Length: 247
Length: 244
Ligand SMILES: Nc1ncnc2c1ncn2[C@@H]1O[C@H](COP(=O)(O)OP(=O)(O)OP(=O)(O)O)[C@@H](O)[C@H]1O
Ligand SMILES: [Mg+2]
Image 1: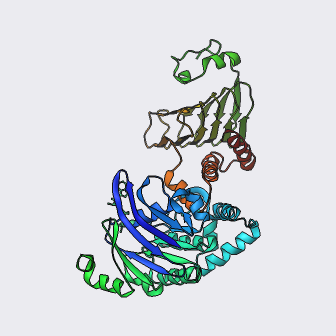
Image 2 (image 1 turned 90 degrees about the horizontal axis):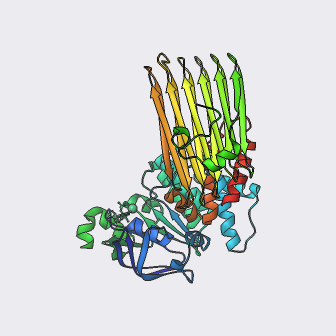
């Protein structure tokens, strides 16, 4: 599904990704762990096409397309979803308002017919219920006044509505209370654990991985993947730290 | 102020004006509005025409009076609206204005709000969206007289420049001679929040749609709570559409 080959990227002229390679196949769940400042969020933003994150080398193929040649909204339409570490607040624009337009813009690119207002609301209500987020919150301005945990849950509701092929979830677990962590974990499984989908979880802790069990765990340090393994690697990292494991 | 002689740029209220266009509509008649004690008046000025226009309101609010003025300054030629408001004790004055320009026109809103007596409240929200060679100006003076204690005055002035060639001038001004006064003014000229645009794009919204959604929200702030909020917003969004 996703083949990243020798990716180099800079932010504000500073090299952050320095030859990162990673392959994710359909049906797989991967976790990336790594010290603060290693470049994990940079990887997500670069794959999402955020302006200011400049690719200086390497290739990324996503479901047979050159991902790097696409604009951010085209990447979304191709099936990429980015769950933000820090979801952005947008005053005056409600979730339901923009998500319906976003979902229909994606459907148009894929040659599917647009969702009516009623169909969209039904879908949104269903996904909000899955994540136990009050539907009324989706009528409010995007993330404005949401608690940290509510923002993360709203990210997962959006993922449910947009139904991507690949979700890159950047520290979805940070800011979640114990119950919300379970709800989000189960939500990720319900939405994304399918043979034709894949997930890249960026996290610092084992706790989310207890719910969303990864097939592969990678350590990102210094802008590249320095170690890969199975689920046991996450536990080993938690016990021994990055320095001991990935040195 | 001599009401008949054409002003020059030396006059503070005209320093950014388009004097050639102004000459065509000069002199500008004063429109007097007086709101009696305890009364409520709402007024909307909508300029969306192709000819140069200037208006000048002089509003007097008696004690406990309330006045809500909304302005859409979005014609395709020169548009200038001056609002003078004089507030009695406990009066409430609201001004919500949007300026939308995408040609080479100059759009101006000039206000002078005089808190003459205690405990009056004034709220001004000005939102400008400027593209191409358009110029948008807001000059807003709030004067709090001696003895006007308990005054509560706020000005929120923001402009979005869609092109490097557009210009925004903003000058909120406070003159305070009283005690126990709450005055807030914020002023910002900028571009749409890049992080928000990327967030919307990452969900699949094409850039033009994302920009439009954010500009809608920005302009809507000027009309929140107006008696004819929907009509004003509708007209504003039509004008916005025409400059995008
Ligand atoms: N706009 C920017 N300008 C300069 N440096 C930046 C910018 N954005 C990120 N960086 C730098 O890039 C490096 C990688 O940041 P990134 O956010 O990808 O780290 P991370 O692995 O996600 O860390 P964390 O675990 O703390 O979330 C950091 O050193 C950071 O300071
Ligand atoms: Mg990060």
